[in-house]
Image 1 (cartoon, rainbow, N blue to C red):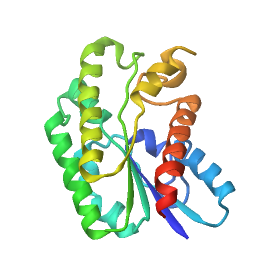
Image 2 (image 1 turned 135 degrees about the vertical axis):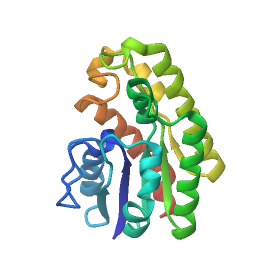
Image 3 (image 1 turned 120 degrees about the horizontal axis):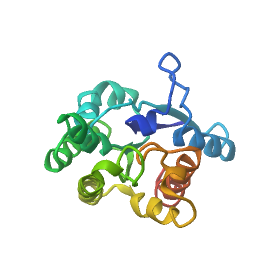
Image 4 (image 1 turned 90 degrees about the vertical axis):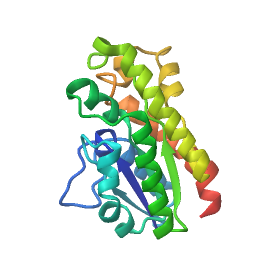
Length: 211
């Protein structure tokens, strides 16, 4: 049985239970595990180790316990929005250059210890809504810098990159920003479904053929 690990911040955490390692929460990890678990019954095990509030440096600090020691066959990483948000809210963020550096160190260590792992890098995203509109220009500019860093990381390490910013931008043509991201950052049910569909598409097209 192949093990799939979801890693990131509150968007990934989505209320997962700490005492039950197999409770993947209420977000896109559960939507993904439901669909793949049904289609490929008994072939995959799904773990969620996202932690609400995490920045890139926080995930790096727990790379051994929450990634390497779990020995996943596949890992997806969605991190970056708190690197921006924490800086704008309380001057405790991570700038774009350090974000790229911390993510690079993390991926390098994971690939060194788990050379056969398949990794998916999900693009950070943001929309203009209640939590972001007050400093919207900075929110967007800085998030785009993290998105560019994530894309460059995937290219440098030859990982699967899952673009999400444009996908959420285009979704606003169907419904307002808050319909997808309730505060501009945290997905609604529809927003999690959007992420899950992009995740599954990338997995089936680029990861599955290599497993």
